[in-house]
Length: 65
Image (tube, rainbow, N blue to C red; front, side, top):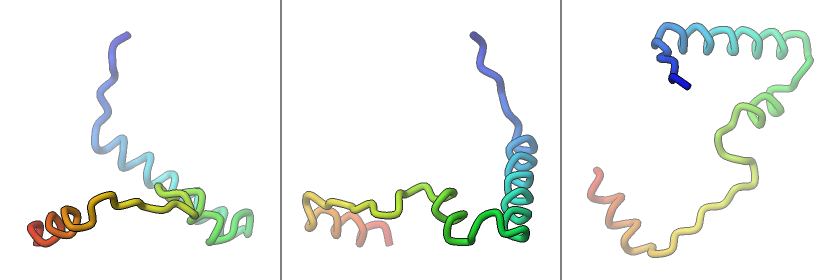
């Protein structure tokens, strides 16, 4: 099966359609702003992060700046 190449324009158009659909749903009250945020979030609501080596983590953060 050959992979299909998608252009930036196609990605942008899909994004704009999703945004328009989200705005319409908010306007009609089909979904609340909180529920929309929850639905569109990349990180689950009650997710937690575990830092195994805090010293290395902080050192890496300071080096990035």
